[in-house]
Length: 158
Image 1: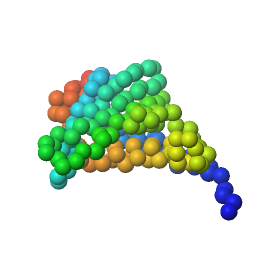
Image 2: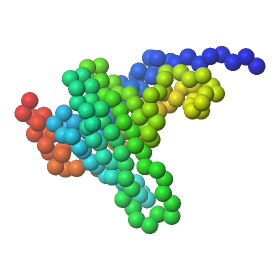
Image 3: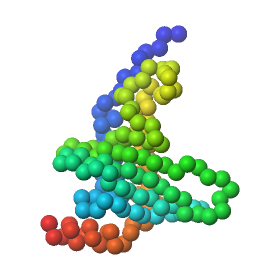
């Protein structure tokens, strides 16, 4: 059976990365003045702490680590908490995943099979996951009131 080579749909991928910029900015609006922002994720069964940490600021890019920690006690099992590092391109208003669960350096397309057993569209998949995760966090998150007030003060004083 002859397989066609996988080709990335660049416009769809870039649209996802652009949407992720606005999703992330909505969750961490004061990133320009604050290095760490925390909020809680509350679902019907569990509560977790979501932490955004600025690792590096440059004129056109910002690197942010997103981590989650369960706040519930006595769970029968534990799953690894998501840990995602992203690079925000401030000039183009786009975000891409640079590391997820300690895996990094994603190529646009992989031959399959490959040594790390990554999917052909692994880069697209991790950025899509980021979008779904940020959308979930936005729907379920409760912001820290002090951080929100500080951001609003900064925004009004511009």
